[in-house]
Length: 603
Image 1 (tube, rainbow, N blue to C red):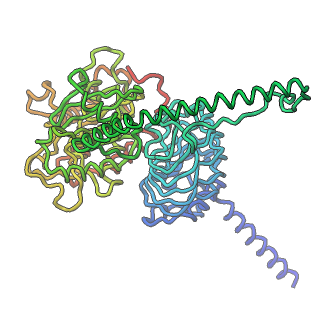
Image 2: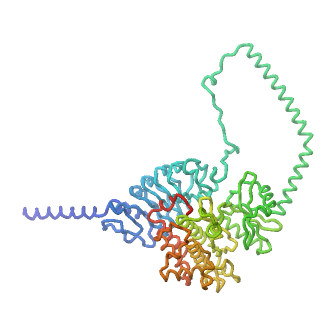
Image 3: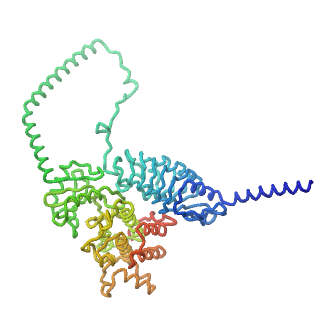
C-alpha cells in the first residue's frame, strides 16, 4: 500500500514538474508577444507560427532578436491587414528597438506603456485608425530617430516632450486631427510644415500659422509689480483735492475730444460711403473675373492680395516650364513664398471637370506629395498654387549640377527613393478614388531643404473612378519612363506608374537619364542597359561613378526591386505598396537610425 502511495506521489510531482517546464519553455518576451497577438485580428493568418510551445520567438514572422541574449529587438509587420489594438503589454519588451505596424487596420489608442521601451529607435504606425493622443512622456525615448504616426485619427496637442528627442531625424504627424500650438522647443523646432501637414487646427512657426486668442491677439494679464504697489497708501487732504481737479480736467478734455471726433465722422460720412462703394465695386468686378479656391484652409492671405500677386507675375518670376505650363515664384508681402503653375485654358477640357479633379487633388495630404494650396481661374489662364521647394528637382541634382558638393550621396539617394515610393503608394492605395500619376520622372520629384522628396505635377494624373477612367486615346508622359503596354495600348494603370518608378530607381543608381546617349546608340534604354550589365556580371559599371560611398548590399536590393518594377509583363510587377514594403524591409532594416544619421547628404 505504501509503495502504491509513493508511486502516486512521484507521478503527481513529475506531472507538475513537466507542466512547469512546458510553461517555462517560452521566454518572457515570447509570452509578451502572445499577449500582444491576443489583441489582434490576424485575418490573413500571418502569425500562425507564433506558438507557445517554442523556446524562443526569434524565428516567428516579423520578429528579430538580439544575437546574444535572444531578447526581442524588432516587430516588423507592415501591410499584414492586422486588426485590433496595440496591447499595453508592449511596454514589457524593454529591449525593443523597432516597431513597424504601418498600413494595417489597428484602432484604439497608442498605449502609454510604449514609453517603457526606452531603447526604441524607430516607430512606424502610419496608415492605421489609431485614436486619442500621443503619450505625454514619449520624450523619454531618448534613442528615437524616426517617429511616423501619419494618416491616423489622432487628436489633441503635440507633446512638448518630443522636443527632448535630440536624435530625432524623421518626424511625420501629418493627416491627423492634432490641434493647438506646436511647441517651438528642442528638436520640434527643426521640423517644418511637411511634418504637420493635414492638421488644420495646428498653429505655430512650423506651419507658418500664428496662434491667436479668441479676441485675435495674445492675452496679457496685468499683475502688481510688487506687494507694496498692491496696498493703497494713506492720502493727505491736499493730495485728494489735487486728484479731484485732475479728474475734472481729464473729463473736460475727453468730452472735447469726443465732440471733435463726432464732427469729423459726420463730415466724412459721405466720403467714406463713396469710398466703400468703390471698394465693393472693385471686389465684385475682381470676383467676376477671377475665381480663387483654397484647400485645407492653409493659405492665410486675403483673396485680394493673392489675386493681386498672381496677376502681377511676369517673366522675372519664372523658375521653370514644361509641356503643361510655366512655373513662377510668388512672394507675398510677408515674404511667404509659393510656386505658381500657369496653365493655358485653351489646352484643358471642361472647366467643371478640371475644377472637380482639382478639388479631389486638393483634398489629399501626404508628406511626400507637393502640397497644393489653391487654384485661381483668371480670364486668360488657370493658376495652381503650390508650396515652393527651393532645392529644385531631382533631375537638377542628378544631371544639371556640375559642382562636386551638389552630388547626392548614397544615403540621400536611398531616402529619395523611399520617400518617392511612399508618395506614389499613397496615390495608388490610400486615395479614393485611386490616382494614377502617369508622369513619374526625376523632374517631377521636387526636393525640400532636407532633400525630402515630394511627388509633383499632377497635370496628367487620372482618377480611377470607373473601369474606363484610365483609358486614353493619346499616350501622354515622358519617353523613357513609359511602360511598354502603355505605349502599345494607351491604357494607363497603377502598374504603369510602377514601371516608371522602377526607371526612377535606375536613374538614382546610375546617375543617367533613361535615354542617355551612352546606351541609346546601342538601341537600348536604361532598363535594357542595366539588364545587359547584370547578365555580364558588371555590377560596378551600373553605379554612378560620382557617388563614392555606394553600399553594395543595398545596391543589389535596389537593383532587384528596379528589375521587378520594370518587368515587361505588368502582371509580374509588384504593386507600389509591395515595392514600398521591400524598400522599407530591406533598405532600412535592421538599423534605420544609421539610415537617417548621415552627416551630409552630398558626396
